[in-house]
Image 1 (cartoon, rainbow over the protein chains, first blue to last red):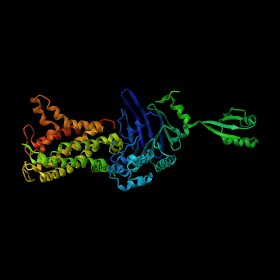
Image 2 (tube, one colour):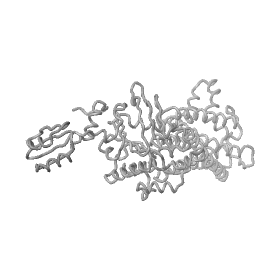
Image 3 (cartoon, rainbow over the protein chains, first blue to last red):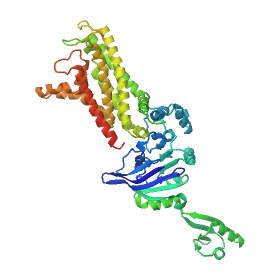
Image 4 (cartoon, chains in turn purple, cyan):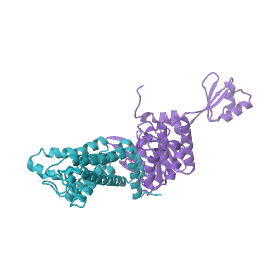
Amino acid sequence: MIQVRELTKRYGAKTVVDRLSFTAKPGQVTGFLGPNGAGKSTTMRMIVGLDAPTSGDVLVNGKPYASSKAPLREIGVLLEAKAMHPGRTAVSHLLTLARTHGIPRSRVGEVLDLVGLSTVAHKRVGAFSLGMGQRLGIAAALLGDPAVVMLDEPVNGLDPEGVLWVRNLLTGLAAEGRTVMLSSHLMSEVSLIADHLVIIGRGRLLADTTVADFVTAEGVRVVTPAPDALRTTIAGPGITVTSTGVEELLVAGTSARKIGLAAAARGIPLFELTPQNASLEEAFMDLTRDAVEYEASR
Amino acid sequence: MKITPGGVVAAEWTKFSSLRSTWITTGISALLLIAFGMIASASLSGDNLTSIDLALSGSALAALSVGVLGALLGASEYTTGMIRATLTAVPRRLPVLWSKSLVAGAAAFVTMTIGAFVAFAVGSAVLNDKVAGLGLGDDGVLRALVGAGLYLGLVAVLGVALGMLVRSSAGAIAILAGALLIVPGLAALLPDSISEAITPYLPSNAGSAVMALTPADGTLAPWAGLVVFAGYVIVTLAAAAYRLKRNDA
């Protein structure tokens, strides 16, 4: 469990994280979203004590991180930039971390296996691709078998197979009852695995919600050669029907299933019957539009 | 499974020993000490030069080299980003500095003490006949040789402290070279009265006093000199500890 309370970070006059509060719970994947420069990485650095908050505090599993007797057992992290010496081999890099906690060498082999780097275990990490570096970072995060796994942009640089692997790994970790938190600036990436969404912009909390609640249904698009007949068939309280083309209707207030059944009962042919969700990406863009830090000129 | 002081030291030893560059720098330091000692022993002579002075004439360069070793160990945490992994594993932070200093200092002490003894042995074997030979049993010889190891071990710790303090390899090495090599030269430009008063207390002069068979005019007594040098190291370590604890990583 990660509890962030009224967390604030200021660099001089610039407030990077502004009174941010949220909780990432065990057994869930929490997606931490925001445009570039929203303060995601700074927040994650404050969670593990790399940066000191200007005010507010963070508890990891109920206590401040630095007070833990076995920090690697509390939380495993992958931070956005590579955190490793290029001259060390993958095994040596993990060993330097494992030794602090008396984690046995066999565990280093296990996590390297788990992330698929066994064959390059004795290669220098300086020669690793971005994707391999990410995998090694994930191996380091899992080293202490932590209760919380927190990953900053974990799929950066991974190939499609790697992206799928991370997705399965994280949902698996959450299913084991661990707290999983991952950051991203891409809604599409997070919506597939996250249960819980924390969205920030310019350091402020914009939404603390679930994926299901965040996507609001807009209605059902129906294409039929007999739009007028269908209108009268499905009319009812709370149901609005708008014409969006010659043979097209947008129906709100009922489900695709009910429209289909009603049409079949009256023998009205349907060419198309599609629930229209506001795309997550659009909803995300709408929410963060005013909070984009770096915007290209149009 | 929990974090222990011994574990942090073991981790720092793993960091030290798993890089090719540390072995190369350590080897070069020992080689400089031995090679210069041998060449000087074979060819140099002078009024006050003893065979110990000649055998340890590579100590100034070896000091620079082990100092660079320490500085790289300290600063590379920051230049590579490794510090983020290090401090998430050890969030209380200070044990990292103490352990890194201990590992670098002990490694440099062991290799440089061996280097000093080898330099003395090789130097004695090739010693030119204008200089009187000395044995390990002669007054001050053992102290000078072990003292060389201690001084060079402390220089490695100074390097680590500077590296962690300024967080940049180039910056740390520049400060180290300045303190050890350039400051004594600058002090010589001062008026004599001031120069004579401060020269014995400059880092490299104070530290080197332990390697002299008998203290020359205008130098500190052997152990007093080493204590003064240790004082510089402690002050630098304290500054590094302060920055490590207070600043964002």
